[in-house]
Structure formats: structure tokens, C-alpha cells
Length: 95
Image 1 (spheres, helix red, strand yellow):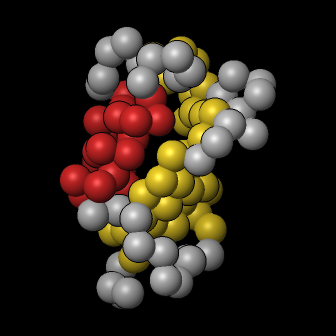
Image 2: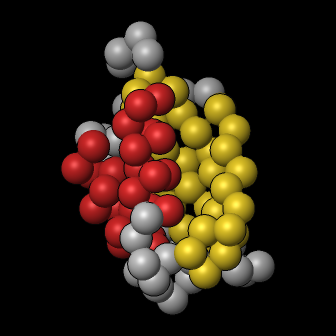
């Protein structure tokens, strides 16, 4: 893993379910070479873990924020420990 690799755990609030958020996240993350996962939460939020360079992680968040009809009103980002051996970015079943 590159020295500047980070892993972010993110909760997104707003109009984030039923608008293609998870699949957009998967496409954007794969294009940036990020690994991790995304899933819908029962409370209407979307939860994500993504791993890569801080710059690419921020690009992912920025792209999602600028993609109608997605409307992110709050984004809670926390850095968490890296996960070794992860190969791709996946859409997980809703929690």
C-alpha cells in the first residue's frame, strides 16, 4: 500500500437513496482506483468505507456532491484503520 493511503468511513445524509448514489459511488471509486464498499442504511443515510489517497477520496466525495439528483446535506467523515487485501469497491446489501 502506498504511504499516503487512507481509509475513510463516511455517512451521507440528504437525498441519497433511490437516486443511484451507490452505483455512482461504485463507478467513481473504481475510476479513481479506490477500494471499499457502500450500502444503504435503514435510517435513510448511505454508509461508505473507501480506501486510497486522501486526494482521490476527496475527489470521490466531491463528485458525489455534484451529481444530481443526489443531494448531500451532511457528510460525516472519519479516518479509520486501513484494510489489507481489499481488491475492489463493492455495493453491499442494505443494512
